[in-house]
Image (cartoon, rainbow, N blue to C red):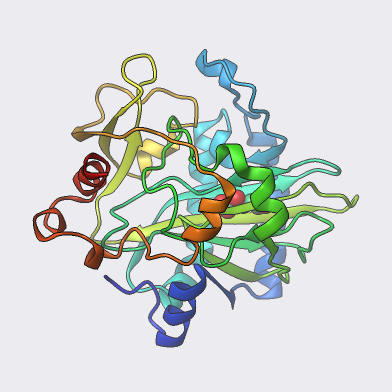
Length: 315
Ligand SMILES: O=C(O)CCC(=O)C(=O)O
């Protein structure tokens, strides 16, 4: 397993808890990025929704999120600004990582709950961890809807994650929030570096102040970026493995069907399932899904997704 951090102490904390908080931006950098956000907001094309992709969903998004902006040029501009502003600090902390998605996340007053989720899989999580750097541009706390995490929940749930794949945690979200979620109260300019597989959530902004944060998703430079897609109209237990890059995400949103031109490098059988809260609690203390010591020899040698498939067939 490859290191995520250059510093060994940070690496150990990250592997233990699934996240670490580090100093990241200066006050001037925070102010500059905040000003940039408001100065360029007129170029935003507004929020895309499921209906824009002729997809029916009752999922309502109540926060502003660059990833679902209708204007691709604006998304690109935000990506360039954030990656440039973060580059030096990313290299100080992370061991050879490249950015693939950049977002501003803004919650208006009395809205902006981000439902419990794990970020999508972006690379082979049996070989590495992919990360999100979450950096609030205002002090963030429980009142204004700071990020909340289940410490130690990374690489224990949702081994196969993508926009069309139902999470095994979907039906126990509120129980997990009540029992396990912990707010990470973070000063403006500090960053929380998350393993993308950690279970996380954020509550509405209950203040009348600004709640603005940046999220930058990165994967190891040497890794292929992959995306798991399930075509629900064709087969609800077949996952296609797409090889993608940052330009794929520039034109992509959670409800869009990936174009046929994107290379499909493999496919595998996977049956989405529902987990009970007792099992969630037990699994927190069990080995992670990237712990290959649990696997028999022939399975150990398979690609990540074929391992998933063979584990399912074996049980
Ligand atoms: O900004 C937030 O409150 C949520 C962020 C989040 O879910 C993420 O960075 O994956």
